Length: 308
Image (tube, rainbow, N blue to C red; front, side):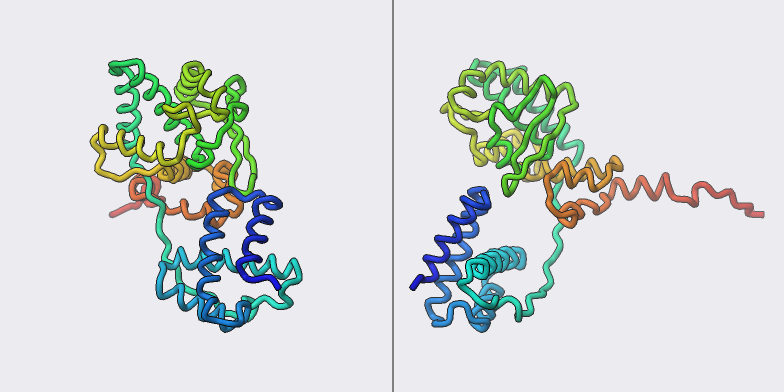
């Protein structure tokens, strides 16, 4: 008879081979499900409603709401698979009350002036490069940041780009997102295109050797962590107090588009969100935009009132 860990292994294989989930998602599933398996060592009825209910209480005692929500989602997906494989006749989640308040955290963005200062620092470092190695690093770093902000893509998507995904003649980039879903985005800014072209010309041999568009100093695939370190270095050089992460470029990209009155459905498609509710987090109005609206676009400004 199969054990719980065996079912988990089979499920993860199914997620990888049939659903084509990315490595980070698989890693999260593995952590979450093995955590449940460890909890179940003290409970003989692994798939019973009471066991699952006590596990959820256990999660609430240890983790923040966002983490709890993810771990419950992992477990629900696993049980759905077991129902599909006819291992389970009933899903224990069908009779559980799972509603709990999750605080809504607004996405952290980079102020426009800080972003401008950050990009200026990149180009200044390039113009002042003292060695060929420093120049090469700057050329690559500029291409990374310009593309990150130009498309709002995730850092994992950027680091996974293949040479064939970048078409500089037609000004497009093909992105493979979560669940192997692809989206084709256009690059319209000439500075971004110039940065990518210079990078491609400079690193052509490394790109061909590595098989990925962005490479590191060891001529291998550029890692997410390397980009994080690089962003930290330039933020320090730019004199920015704010801690900046790669994902903040995505948040800033989406928020600035909204402030330019771009329809949220277009932003959803550009970002690769499967649900509009995920994109709606960006619909908060920034204080600057709010001030502009209330000062300059309030209908009271259009009224001519006779004050006697």
